[in-house]
Length: 310
Image 1: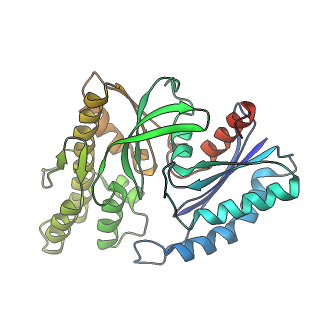
Image 2: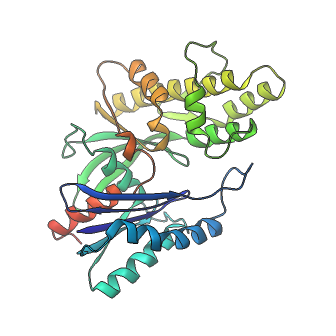
Image 3: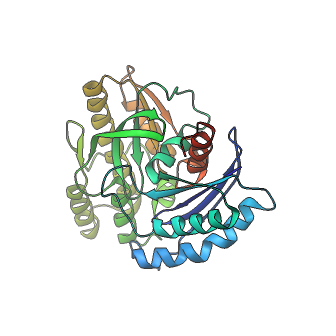
């Protein structure tokens, strides 16, 4: 049994895997004060430390643990660091020391990729594109499986704020509680007038100018809330269709997997699926595993342990 731990910006997560399946998956969203657009890292760290003992107890129960897998950093690149992951790392090391079992380190992004593959028909031994679409990340990755998990090269991205930040900043502006994606998804109305235009060059996207324009139109009374929400989703989807199409053409890779919390929106997923050319084979993460979780981390730990790649 492998215990997986992930302490991201806004979710404390743990999961238990026996190698073939996820036996337990426990998560707790961090609390963000009303009208705030996020948390300081120190506050996120404190909440993770407070959440982990109870969540791990619920996740493991009386089962024996063979190793603890944990997200060490946001990505597998030199210099990748975020203080909130330290809460999970130190907890994993403490548990492993007491139980005399190994710690298997991976990354938050690789955990997202592995979780998105659960139940998918994608063969991950072949190269594939993964679009990591979350609250803090909008990246198009060329992925290949290796002994550590998933080597990922950025082949497209946002050059400023992420799609999730665009959603949350404008949602908070209109009075929605943070995070705002679910409420916007429920309010979405298709077929509205096109009021926001994408800013895309090749596989590079920009959302900051869209934020400025949308906020200005809303504050002047030119857009009501529902029109604004729908326009945001439309422009995010159109931006991704253009950027992913360019990345697929550049890399020659025709299989695309979408991961991350923003991709769990049925409306955004539908808009992207219908917008991409037929030459691209498009798959979306199971909604249970799209948002931040430790299931993928636990599965990577299992696979590393089985292959003696601890």
